[in-house]
Image (cartoon, rainbow, N blue to C red; front, side, top):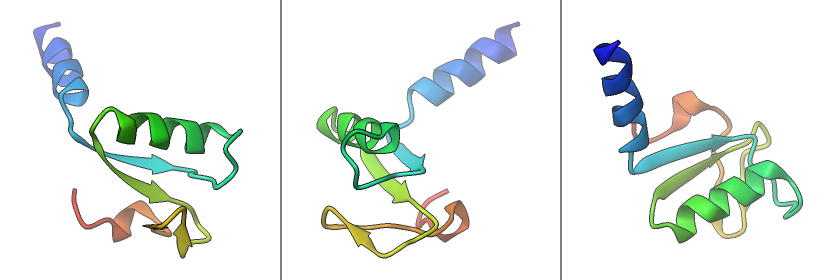
Length: 69
């Protein structure tokens, strides 16, 4: 049980996030979550299979392309 608590705490303490399924559509959850995390001060990487750039951010086509683990 203790190991589970440690894993949860490690997850919650992360300051770098990736949002898989990011969308430019402000009504979609990927967009809402990414912007909420950014406003809270987290570093966030958008991931969308289309790649490119959205809202002035580089969008990664897959998690394997991210600059951080």
